[in-house]
Amino acid sequence: VAEMEKHRVQWLIHGHTHRPAVHELSANDQPAFRVVLGAWHHEGSMVKVTPDNVELIAFPL
Image 1 (cartoon, rainbow, N blue to C red):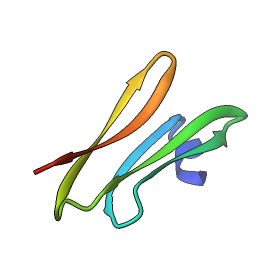
Image 2: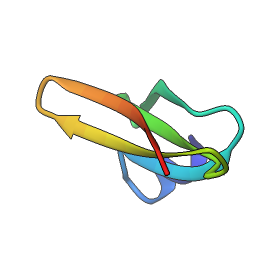
Image 3: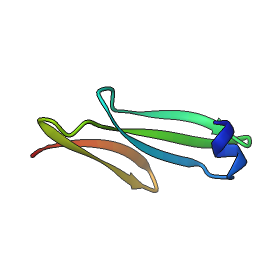
C-alpha cells in the first residue's frame, strides 16, 4: 500500500503466484485494489475490470 500511495495509484496488478485473488484496500483514503494473477501451469488467468465489477478469470491453456 505504501508504494501505491507513493505513486498515487489505485490499482496494482501482479503475479504470477499460486494464490490468485483480488484484494480490496485503501490507498490515500480512496478505494484501491491489488490483483494477484495465478501461475500459468495448468490454466491462465486475467483480470476483467468494468465500472461495476472486478473479476479474476481463469482459463485453460
